[in-house]
Amino acid sequence: MSKILVAYFSASGVTEDAAKKIAEATGGTLYEIRPETPYTKEDLNWQDAFSRSTLEMKDKACRPVIAPGTAPVAESDVVLLGFPIWWYTAPRIVESFLDAYSFAGKRIILFATSGSSGFGSTLKDLQECLGPGCSVEEGIVVHGTQDLESWRQWTQSLEL
Figure 1 (cartoon, helix red, strand yellow):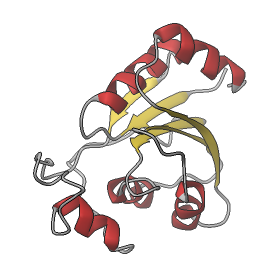
Figure 2 (cartoon, helix red, strand yellow):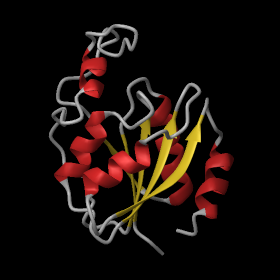
Figure 3 (spheres, helix red, strand yellow):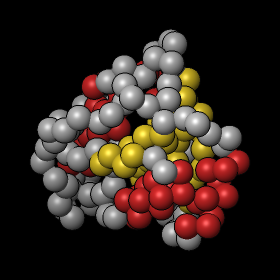
Figure 4 (spheres, helix red, strand yellow):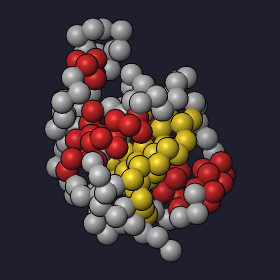
């Protein structure tokens, strides 16, 4: 059986809820990707052209600093990587996380939460961040919450 890491970034708690259920469904290790400076409600106001999240997403080179901690990436075979969809892609802090570790030889499967959009350019953007030798798979985007059984069924379909 694969060693599974469920790594996630959550701004409002929705993705955190999903990640916890996925970790329970798979027996995986849970790891939260946290910004060194937490996001405030004002930072997350996507309607404000000068909010922190808007400015980060406009700058493809932006890499928000991650809070100290060590994700057990090296010990994992599979990384289930979760985040909310921002501007049709992953938040820049997810790219900071990918830059911080080697994912060579790992199976990376995405799960995302969104009010209404799909993955958009996420797969392409994250593959570019990882570079050659790493593969990323689109997993699932959920709109709203899912119960544990739904997550169990999804993870079983992945043949981990």
